Amino acid sequence: MRLDGEAADSPSRVPVRVRHDDGEVTLHVERGARLRDALLAADSDTDADLDLSPYANATERLNCGGRGLCATCGVRVIDGPEASHWHDSLAERFGYPRLSCQIVVSEPMTVELLTEKRVWGGRE
Image (cartoon, rainbow, N blue to C red; front, side):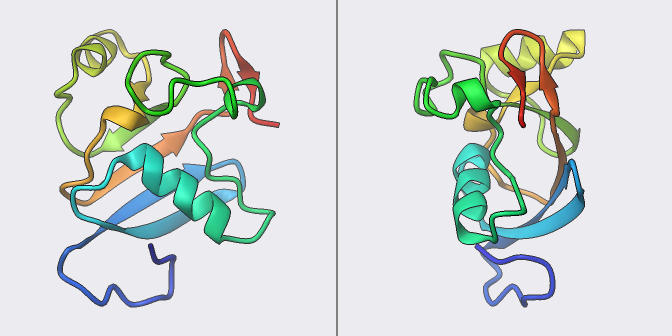
C-alpha cells in the first residue's frame, strides 16, 4: 500500500482516491484486493490523524469481518467498478452506499467515506 507522493512501483497497483473528513488521499492498492482491506491497512499504516476506516465507531469491532453480511462498511463509489455483489447492485440502484468488503480493486476508482451512518452513528 502506498500513499500520495510515493511511486507505484508495480503495474499491479491501482490508484484509489479516498475522500474523507479532512480532504482526499490517493492510495496505490494491489490489483485484486478488497477495498475494505485496503482502507483498513492504510488506516493502520498512516499517522493517527488520518482515519480511513470505512466503519463508524460502534462498528469498528462489531462487524462481520468482510463477509458482506452486516452492511457496516459502506462507502460511496464516485467512480469505479460496477456492482457485482447482490447487496451492492441494490444499493447502487437505490442510491445507498456500497459495501467496501465486496468491492474488488480492479481499476482506478474514487470513493467517499461516510461521515454519518444512519443506524451506527458517526465516525468520530
